[in-house]
Image 1 (tube, rainbow, N blue to C red):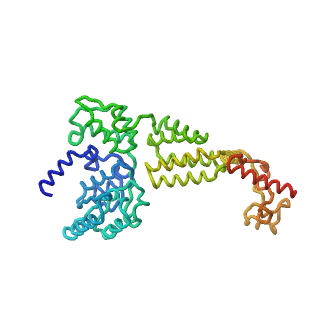
Image 2: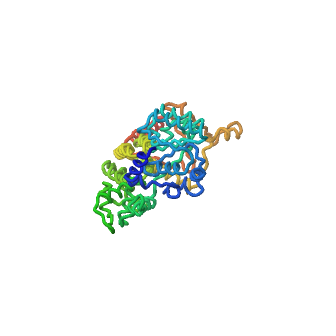
Image 3: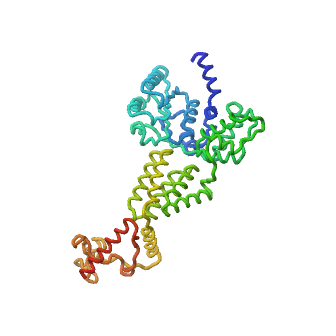
Length: 445
């Protein structure tokens, strides 16, 4: 770069958003991701030893994917190049690859290529990188908010290590904000600005692990207000800057359990509107959508069951869909599942049936399996496959309607009834079928 380009870059750095200015320059100042960057963790060791191979960084927005790439850029002796999948095409990739080949051939220097939002590259663009990752011309670092196993070519995945970055926890967000307010070089440390503990707690909850969102809110709060030394950022200011209304939702406290309880009971009570209300509270509170999906799968079986057998299929399918899609679009999928389950006919007959059956097995001497139901090996162990009490197994398909009356329960609990279908939805048809089979048997007695 010439002197004018260097000056322009330095001016741009000074005028960059707070979130950009506060990106860590070294691994020691990086917050979060202790599962891969903590002391003696593999990624930390590879970065510090400058022995990094191709990797894919996968995680939600604002958790440090590009920050980690910057740390690597500051640490490595390799030539570090960056492209953005939104604004770059094959032409830009070819230029970087040419530089990488020159570096390796002329100076024995490796090149690290960082591709932000790599999932935005189409198959042709990803294929263009592959040969140079394979032959070692470039070391790839890809960052994506989408599941790479769905969005990145299998060939690239197989030649890379995938590291999942998790949402930042509340304490980490709070510390990042405090650092921004105290940092004199890149933050607001030259001003004596404080933030109310209530405001900081609210901010750290509402941003749902997104450090960039938290820093943007703080920057707006400072720049849009007439602050002087000793000024305090209140919760009302944060609410205004982040454009989110505050409501109490502690994901590990009472409100979490209260709202979840109200959510499940509203679906069980066939009230789709109330169900959507509590779903919205959970989403706004930053509840894990996988937790919501798991609860819906349980409810589909426990509270709907065979009254609508497709409810469980929909709930499981929806859980798989949100795993692939992520937020914010997953709110639509959750809404579809919730409104369907809330509107479906209800039955807890299967739930009651298994509980009663388990109770009998746990507390009663239930006796032995009827001999004619045992495995063929057990039958061969008797003389000439003789029957017990004159009974032999009756093959249902050999009888009209593929049904024949015989005892399947052990003799001691022969008259125990576990599954009693309701008269709701499809269970009404189950009742009709079972009654029909019983009537057929009575006519043949």
